[in-house]
Image (cartoon, rainbow, N blue to C red; front, side):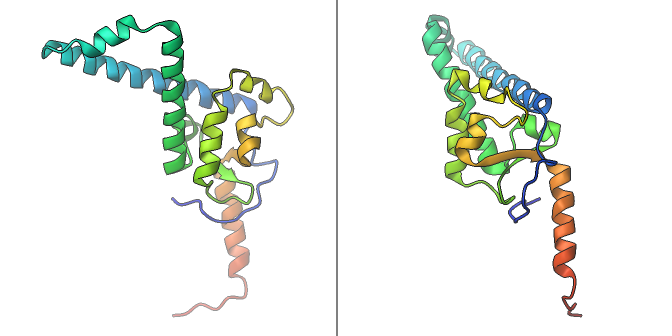
Length: 168
């Protein structure tokens, strides 16, 4: 389903903090699965005679680990939100990323969202009544309930159809 249309986002569509937290936890689990997949590839490569991946993991220091994990998370969020307006967490919780007018976010907006998540103190931006993180405000995006969005879109379309003639 394509969400590239205009429907003014209102406060009733915004997602509560606990769904935002659940999105994060699911996305962290997805990144862990990515690393487990890389580990499986490393074991398979080792069985075929190349220990390079396993040696690289074993010799990695804590700072390199943090940098690589952060980069994987940023790339994961950038790609999934760019392609589908959703990460795995958003898909499971029924939420979606949109611009203020309800349109699909631009590539720049999605990139800004992903890069802002590098800031370790970014989580503090959710400590307020309306849970809108710095990655949301910096990119002018909103995380909203997909069902409420679809309902608003349906109402808008039905109003747009009033007075239009049907061509048979």
